[in-house]
Amino acid sequence: MKSTQTSAKSAGAVAEKHDGFTDEERGAMKERAKELRTASRRSPRAAKADPESEVLAKIAAMPEADRVLAERLHEIVTAGAPDLSPKLWYGMPAYAKNGKVVCFFQSAEKFKSRYATLGFSDEAGLDEGTMWPTTYALTKLTAAVEARIGALIEKATS
Image (cartoon, rainbow, N blue to C red; front, top):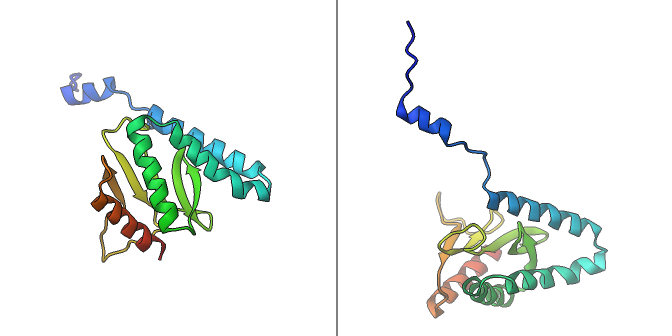
């Protein structure tokens, strides 16, 4: 005879339905789809001029704490790696080389996190042995942190 009882653990799992992506993740994917549609409609001349203004507009729309970090990060990246092109990537400021994202800023507010992040893609040359960090939490940009970011950007693009 089979028991009809279920454990508390499995009963709780049924009650907690998981749809896969959070609302924030779905929003980021929609922003990325919009970015791709917009980029495909641009003329070659407009493609060179518009992305930075879009990045700056996105930064300007951020809450103050994130905006301060993103503005300064934008200055550090554009000064330290002029060969990187600003662009939006999943609705976040990003910096690309030959069209491929090397690094990006993610505001704390975007995914309701307690800190913003500076992330690097696999296009970044940060390899150190068999394991290395690719994402850094940001809460405040001090002179030491800015110097570290500058060094990371330089290494990522070399």
